[in-house]
View 1 (cartoon, helix red, strand yellow):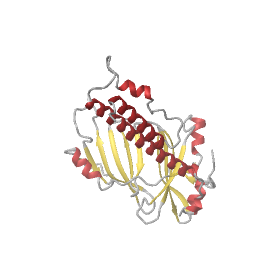
View 2 (tube, rainbow, N blue to C red):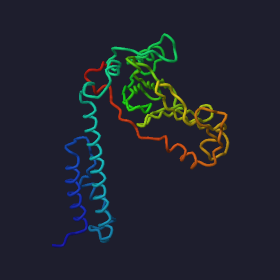
View 3 (cartoon, helix red, strand yellow):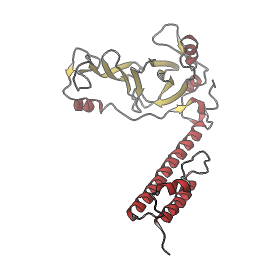
View 4 (cartoon, rainbow, N blue to C red):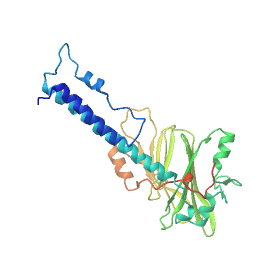
Length: 291
């Protein structure tokens, strides 16, 4: 039996419909399967009843199958994201983690910790409430935490984060003796400042509202922060292609070193960079306070 070019296209449409039905995993919202009218329109021509150019037929058919493969990839990605969301929302308990009792107490809002930068002030799990009442920020904040060894003693510290872009707070808390103390506080309410922490315990901070800066920090055995390397660009309006003009080490600004290239900058920061640490959503734990 001789199959016309148009029939080949329609047959490809039936195959595509079957493929997309399988890859959609029962979703009723996705409406990307072309109907037969759309398929027939793909092979419309002026006054003729058959497609004469076989190459055009195969090109159209190939395009349909490529669309099916793309739809399958999108569906697989959506399924993966949905699975992650379900896992993230599953109720767990802080006791399921290898976490210091003082960290667990802070995350349950049972204790607060002295603010090292403001005498008489305490930092707590619900600090977003103060900001939302006084400054109307963090009104729908997300909270998470991570366990990272920031002073290279083999014991993890607690990194607690409250964020609702561009507003962000990050506390690094540790245990000294039998006391919970705050090693450092990072705060921003603008997109011109940013900070973060690597899984190797090194913290980064940068800003571009007054020149440009990029700083890498570490901590000593007592939890005191200190600079490792500090990059500066003073005149951001210049035509220079360099990311930064100079850098200095260990917080000593008297030992400035002029940067020669961006490649030099990348080589300098490479030893300090790590991976993103594992973050735990506070909403995932049944024994943590809810908003």
